[in-house]
Image (cartoon, rainbow, N blue to C red; front, side, top):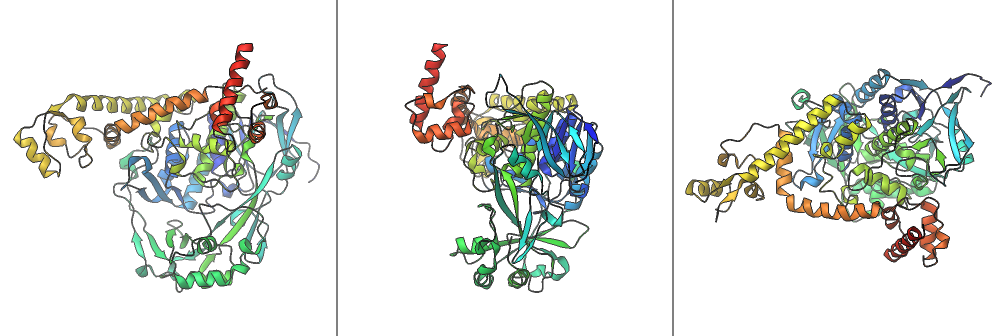
Length: 639
């Protein structure tokens, strides 16, 4: 690094231009802050180094929430998808989740164009090597001992700023492993970031090592799809973004294909485990439990005779096909032998080898739920840098980190989404509160209020927050209010209309596979029957208004599940009461004699901001919470 006296002044610096960095930078710039986003390569903006899709189970919920708050991911996938499907439609609405195959080159190109044309935002290709800070203290937060003042790049340029958002993804001291071959690169052969970790450690930030991986890419021409099961997209297509016109996104879709591993595949893997970096002890980092390599699947699920393999196109203008379900770090010769045992892949040709990638990230318990470091003013973090996995989880965190960095610079109160408001809230709360020793992946089972946090009502939950922040325009908000009004009026209307037990009504019900009426019943009560839908009860509703499908879907869900929804709302009230019991930042847990030693250690380490958060810390028991409540009550009475 040479001598460079160039100094730039901006409001906010965002380090990394993956899915987290893009959302963070756009949020900051859209809120009027002069923002620069750093990337090791402008060609890697919004890169999809692994699976070429957006959404999926629970992840689709997060994309909808990002959109409802004013983020970009939903809009961008609506412009660049090549296949779309709603998952879990045979189950209840709480787990319905949209998933779209992306044209990955177009997705990246489209997002880059959005960033390039965003006012107040500058893209800078440069490696950030050092954070600049000064000692300080805060009257409002006794944990604070540092303040960010800027950063330096590899070429020596200094950027002075009010806040930094770290979204480094899998680039910090990254290395890729394919069998015995190790290359010191970031994903997709891109340049790693080798210097920033040392600066973080020097600041006292706890760094850990994680690992993830990706499967091989195949030449489409070498595959025999006649031996696979074709997987087609939905008709009609449902958009991700609440701002997208459903009619405008209908298009011809590209098929994916399903095939399976077999015992021959598994034998090749077992015979070569000693050559896998995962099992040979070469890999230092911890891998994701819920997105395992094919080696892990064969070892940990030895009773399974086969595993699903989805063959997915990487885009419209390439013959590369993604082999979903067969992530691996085995040597190239073993990979080829293994893949060629799968039906339809007997003559496959590998375009890109599968590999595992190791990288530095942080222990996210160093963060508040605002995603600011507890002891450092102006330093925020989002994405895989926080120990998560997945594009969607990264984007959700990046959006919140960017929003809060901007709000802080503007002198406004930062936002926190709690577990009852959003999947993003569950994600962040889990990261900053619980012990996470592997890359965190969102699942619907993690959300205890999932019936309230459906993907269809993300706008109802979060659009007002996005508008209040300033990321949702007045025009978008007016459309939301109109939709909300239509839903409320239609629910009230069908609750007010009663039908009697006349013979013609009974005949219609029988024809629909439903039982006859015993007495006069409202249309809403009729809709509660599991075998009936809003459309099927139309014969009883001669004055039915013409409504958009999104409104009809919301009406049907709200009416059908009203009892369950009310019960969860009561649970949320109890949850909110605990969240509102705040813990002062200057509390000394050593003063609370009745606390168990383990609880005292965990509370001192994590520094929860509320009794609710404290109750979710592993190692803190209900009796510890009772002791804490008594202490806080006595402390309050003393004051």
